[in-house]
Amino acid sequence: MFEFFKKKDKRNTEQNNEIKETDDKCDNENSGFSFSLDKLKQTVANTAKNLVQSITGAIETKEEFDEFALDDTEELLIKADVGVNTAAEITDKLRSKHSKIKPSQIREFMKNEFNKILESAGSEKINIKEGLNIFLITGVNGAGKTTLIAKLAYQYKQQGKKVLVAAADTFRAAAEEQLNIWSERAGADIIRKDGTDAAAVVYDAIKKAQSENYDILLIDTAGRLQNKHNLMEELGKITGVIKKLAADSFSESLLVIDANTGQNGLQQAKVFKEISNLTGIVLTKLDGSAKGGIIIAIAKEINLPVKLIGVGEKITDLKYFNSQDFIRALFE
Ligand SMILES: Nc1nc2c(ncn2[C@@H]2O[C@H](COP(=O)(O)OP(=O)(O)OP(=O)(O)O)[C@@H](O)[C@H]2O)c(=O)[nH]1
Ligand SMILES: [Mg+2]
Image (tube, rainbow, N blue to C red):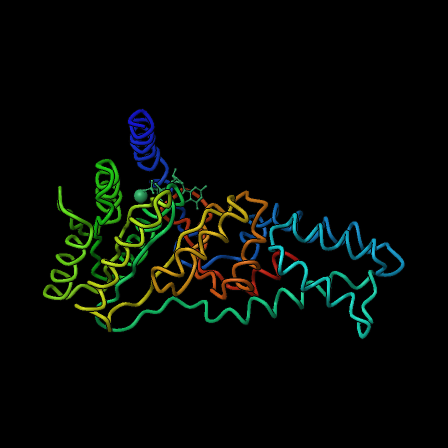
């Protein structure tokens, strides 16, 4: 067990070094939260292969939607990570006797279905207003929470905002150190308190943010899902403190999901939604992933919008998610 943590801490130290080297290479063309359609296309190329090309390639040439073609469609949708229920629902629409859709129209049909699903999941805009904005960042181990905080801190600092980071991952000593290095690089201030519980760190951070007029407070949390009871208790306490001290400033409760975890990500979203009043999802490591279909599953089955995507390890590799651009990048 201790070996595991030692290994993980060593991994984090290595990560810090890597970050130091790579984030010097910030390319201005790619800075800020926005993303060109071409770059998005490159990022989702593997997802497009898995979710669009493989399905259209197999189905388009069939004569009609008989049971074989319908089964194939459903299986391919499941393989592309849109979720079992979503795949069944989409296939049922094709099976319906009112459906006049021909296999040759599968591409247009999927495009419309995905569009409708993403639109129904709510606004993708990050909620930012005048005054203090608190972001609570949750997710399982290694999903990319600390990296996300660094990226957010950097972007908001670039916009001239006053940014404070709270190291409420008190579970692992190296986690605070990792956050410290990241925050320094982003130019943000950090609140850390060795040997206390996470809620106490959050309490101090909110007090400081309020009295010193910060614009943004980013709260990093521990990612232990192994013990759901502890996690619920800790996150419950943290959200309790935020609501008590600064309910009006609680702008975003974001769950970080690693795109490569596929259907596991859906389970994570279900558990965390119960605990921490989620307002949206951040999908990290979309770069190179073939499992971006999870965005459809999350929208349909958890009813939460993806708000941001992680597209690499550099500090500028965090982009707004826009479902219309996502659909265009997949289908055009
Ligand atoms: N390629 C890629 N790597 C990423 C992205 N976001 C994070 N990572 C990498 O994922 C690894 C884990 O990131 P962390 O930010 O430490 O994850 P965490 O959720 O804070 O992990 P714990 O604190 O252990 O729970 C690091 O090596 C990051 O560089 C991304 O968008 N793309
Ligand atoms: Mg972390």
